Amino acid sequence: AQTVTQSQPEMSVQEAETVTLSCTYDTSENNYYLFWYKQPPSRQMILVIRQEAYKQQNATENRFSVNFQKAAKSFSLKISDSQLGDTAMYFCAFMKHIGSARQLTFGSGTQLTVLP
Amino acid sequence: KAGVTQTPRYLIKTRGQQVTLSCSPISGHRSVSWYQQTPGQGLQFLFEYFSETQRNKGNFPGRFSGRQFSNSRSEMNVSTLELGDSALYLCASSLAGAPGGTEAFFGQGTRLTVV
Image (cartoon, rainbow over all chains, first blue to last red):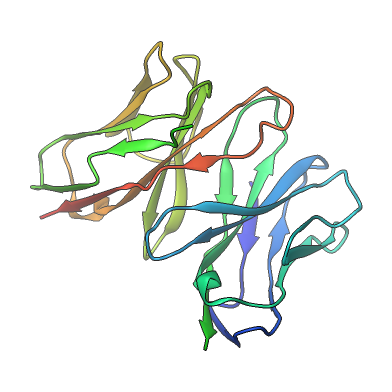
């Protein structure tokens, strides 16, 4: 079974600064996907960024980037130029590459607060 | 393109009752997954349906069931409700099987309160 660990329950960052959220996972799979989702107060889960395990290049999406260390089973999210709208709960998630089946295993989340 | 629609948004039920939640996926998406979110247990996978067949199930008791219709809409049912079933239930749809179809799009959830 896969496990995802987010060791930072809460973090805060000043507006325009950079913050890094940590995530580690445990799996015996070789092919898989990793995701970061954000959940603002509206409770809508929104995909922030996705990483395929077979790709060595770290994924980036505008102000969001990841540091994917496959051997260390680490998948951290860096948010640059933080904005007030980034305030949300952030979840790291794992998905096995098992054909077409879709099952996400989530971490416990990190509540990020961006301070004005 | 309409997103994932979950109805109702809020529900209050009494212990022992049963409840049915509905999820309409994004048009063209054939995979629908359900998750339970609670403060204590976090986000937990319930089950996944694809082409009207349940192909993946999480570790939940048999009181939790679901189904998917030919138009990909899905319902989940919880029978004999317990106080611990109070949670936000999230539905997600995806283009499972299609290239790049790994992304799960979530609905806004149904907040179930059992009293």
